[in-house]
Image 1: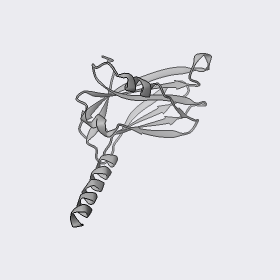
Image 2: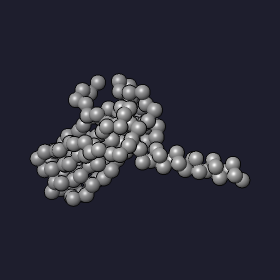
Image 3: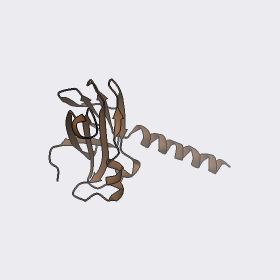
Image 4: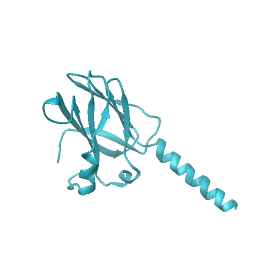
Length: 147
């Protein structure tokens, strides 16, 4: 019985540790319309598989004035050259509804300096900034190359 309680307690601590130490992206819609966000992870230089493509095709709708927090999964911790790809469309998903499109690519690195990335989406521009978190195992770095 003591062994079971001990294993449960250790498992709970591990889950809490990984849950609170994950880097995250906070996306805020400060525009006058809806923003549709596409979020996916991949390995740098490796073609995405079917599941990764399927995941990145589903848009998350953020209404005016709302924010959303996105984080990497436990499996993304162990990617050798992990990347997070975030794209957004302002106004709509298709055709003439779309007012503006943008994206950013983030490298997933070891370290704890840049745990939280804030993306504020305005009508005419975007503001990308880092927010300091108390502790995280992995961190983000904005990259400009898409290889």
